[in-house]
Length: 70
Image 1: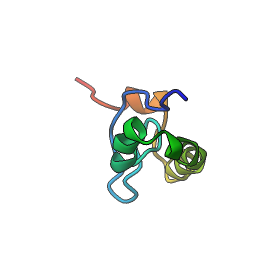
Image 2 (image 1 turned 30 degrees about the vertical axis):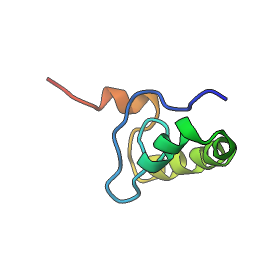
Image 3 (image 1 turned 90 degrees about the horizontal axis):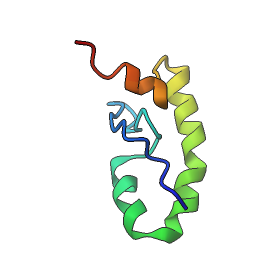
């Protein structure tokens, strides 16, 4: 199973969810080591991204565009 990470790796301070993929930092570490947890982690991500989006945050690829403006 491919990682849902899209290399945004910025986190919401309230929830801890990544704006890019929805994973928590500990889940990103476990993803690499524990293949049996992957389906449960992946199943939680759509709701997390929806929660971030509903709170007015850019998510997924759109979060990359909000990263840095020079």
